[in-house]
Figure 1 (cartoon, rainbow, N blue to C red):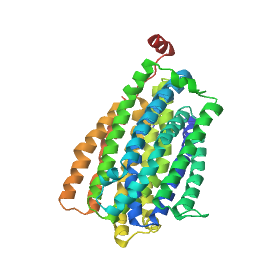
Figure 2 (figure 1 turned 30 degrees about the vertical axis):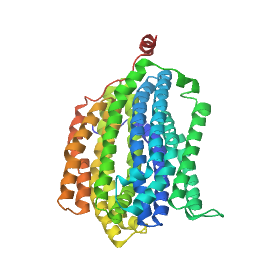
Figure 3 (figure 1 turned 90 degrees about the vertical axis):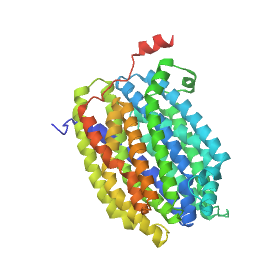
Figure 4 (figure 1 turned 60 degrees about the vertical axis):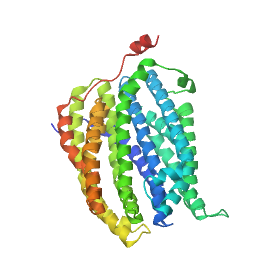
Length: 459
């Protein structure tokens, strides 16, 4: 049987996926509002903020590794209803993520212009990006804490709090953007600085809400500040053993993303950079439902494997593959149909609009592969316990296929859309590896330990 008839699978899948997808949609809405409002200031401002946000992208990928480690370990412990071990895992993640956010904040605030100039030589773009990065850099610690706490709630199947926080962030960020970017109610028009300040304030509010909820309102995990003092050596070992491949994989992707920006920025054409930003925003919009489904599949996979229900998981895995292939085909069609209406929302030059069309045409094909392999590999392989496989495959793809092909194409004088296609080609190629790996079912590994074992080791 290819498709499971287990009604509880679909019920649990969509009860988790709907609030998570809406959270991603609202998070996208915050970024899109920033993008659209800043875009009204011209291509220089749009390109500057896009490049300035590459540090955020880097941080998000690092924190995504921490979130992934928490989600995979905590979801498996949740399958055993071992909340004590989950609290210890969350404590490790919070401390690690906060330290990471602090380090990147310091670097971003001290060297904003130098960081932006790594990606482009356009003076206007460097100036705007540096001004944006200097302010938004202060938000990174708050961002890290909020994301780790939201991830810990998802692991115990409390997904709605992330949605509620995102709703607050949406209205806060859009309202502050309107006031601070354009200068309303007697305040000066701050341009990109206003967008950065709005983001900073929104993230402080986000972090405050989730911390208060976890400490005061949550009844499942019952996390306390005193949990941060406890160190379980065995779980620390597990966290880094299983978390480092995720962080390493995200590091590979952060290098890939920054290299993408650097390669396309080498055209020294604000239209190309603006097109990259526009295409990326449409790609993120379509990715919303894939991310929601992928996250919910990951939680169900971790819980099922943690409970030792391997035969049930095999049926779930077959269902998930059919689901994500279908999502990919629908997503590709939507990207193509939304291309021109989406581009028309931006104040861009005819040249920038044409670059955007070309880039989005590429995405309409590659997103089919992205939805199948990326979602299935996270939702099944990573969450099922075989974490290092995805890291190895991504490393080979990025450094042996993606970047070499893009660099060769660029120095051969290829058009920007061809270079862009090279940077996205692995999304299709990895599908062939993914389908073989998933259907061998050798990725199901129980990563949990008995509580007595943890106690004996810590003693």
